[in-house]
Length: 227
Image (cartoon, helix red, strand yellow):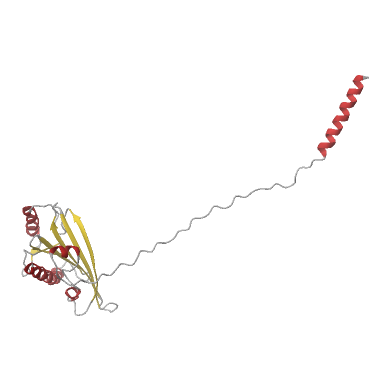
């Protein structure tokens, strides 16, 4: 009798358990969380500033002034290469170098450069463009004998000497160089219309560079005489 009662209680408990489980219904939909899309980085173009156009200072001053400014030439000297021209510049730069612009020899120097851009009749059919650059080199911890040797050696290897300029002027690789005291002055003109493979083209370039060199040499001489 006790066994039958226990079995009955067990069956009744099972029935209640089944009834309770059948009353719980699982959710028919699941909530899925979608991660927020990652932010896409945006690229912002950086526009370089427009190059500043420097006005040509009036010539004059000491040799140190010639290194720190572009007062060895002025716009009138440069636009004199044409009957009419527009001049932009100069753009000035000073560097400590181990090779002078006209020489492959190793020697320490301070080198100053000034670049002018010359436009003749821009927009016309006979438009012409020139780039005129001059370099000044002064010794930096170099002996006077070593400094003089650089110019002498370069002149000996040059394509030709340039008379009427003075300062042992010589021309080589498109550059005209002369000496003034302990300063080497080099003139370089880029003219894309000239055929530099021809003798006529080279002579025309030398003629223009000689004109600029004479202006620069005259200005240097005035400074020396005024000191």
